[in-house]
Figure (cartoon, one colour):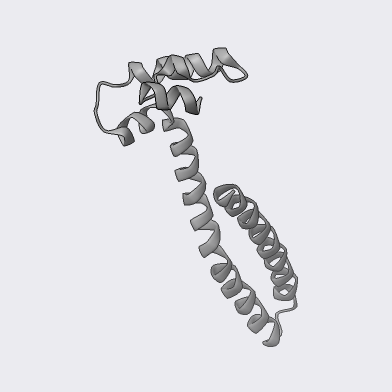
Length: 118
């Protein structure tokens, strides 16, 4: 290939060897050339992969909400613990429910952020 590149001075699409899954490569190349209505590459990429961008944006939004939820849950835990100290025994059981909710939210947050960053 290097000899051909030196001889011709450039590569054409036909000069490159066909990779595995040639049909997939040909299909992607045809789709790419069909999208050349806009000269900007970022618009072409956005048109082809818009569904992936939507998934990542939604996962980021859900991850952001999950990140801001634990302080609210901690506030509820502290509120119920203070009520328990004032003699409300049922509040202690509710505090444990909030502790379980905190664990679930932190686990969910870890899964969503792992998806986003992976």
